View 1 (cartoon, helix red, strand yellow):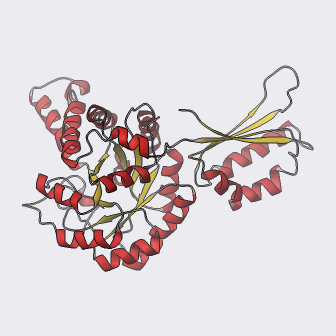
View 2 (cartoon, helix red, strand yellow):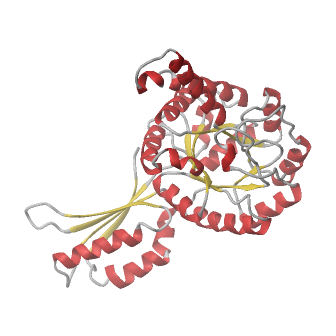
Length: 392
């Protein structure tokens, strides 16, 4: 079960001066290629899903596959929501299994960016999920992601970076020092002096968006100056496209023939970057130092008084509707005993939390308190409650 705490993963990388790849995926071919590379290289990895890509897949469906891939891995894995567009997106990402989140408010003025990011950080931190913020603006130049990041570059200043981290409490900061989303035009010029000063002031893992097109030496200098997480997508997309172009030139027939070799091409590009960024053979160290990310099952067995079966069903339906909206709650299931004899308890709640810190948050959340005090506790005095940390 090497799904691990993302903050612990990046803390290890920051302390040991290497970077973890946050590889964006848009299909099962990407997911399988990324994981194949991480396993072969014995490297920690971040599976990144960007809201800007949601038009290409069903987020909920691909998250089920992503969580399954992480749980069966033998290397440490974190799952990150990249470029989330709202607090609601972040809450949904956590519910579906993301254990790191980013809200992208970098296109707003400083005060609005800080306000939005702090709101997200407060909610995510309450359930133990680390948060990435972005300060400055990384535009798109060309390529399939470029149109999603219009406008001119806005560099991160060390002074504003320090203020932003203090005001928002983010765990990681994405900075703008000259990279772009999509493909570079010409030779990229990065402001390493600016990065070094930001790193000296903050002392937290820094993030680079727009890694495609940088030289090996530039990547090394980024890592020397505090960059610990590198977002990487366009080069993976280009590698996949080259395979498909080559297959199409051979006039192959059918979809499966057209995409044959895509996973291997993605894996090869991931291997190249893992080796360059220094995360190769770090898996065992991270597994030793990072806390495992384990879900919790909140179980309530109970009987009701004063309600018939229809009333009890309405009580359960109301709870499923309202309690599932609490941040950190992944699923709310209810059930009725099927034994022919009278059981000690007739009804059950199964509420899945993303990890143990949610227990107290859920207990004290106003939505839970209102439902429990007004609807549940008055009719369910006969009950037991147990929280189980789940084996994976």
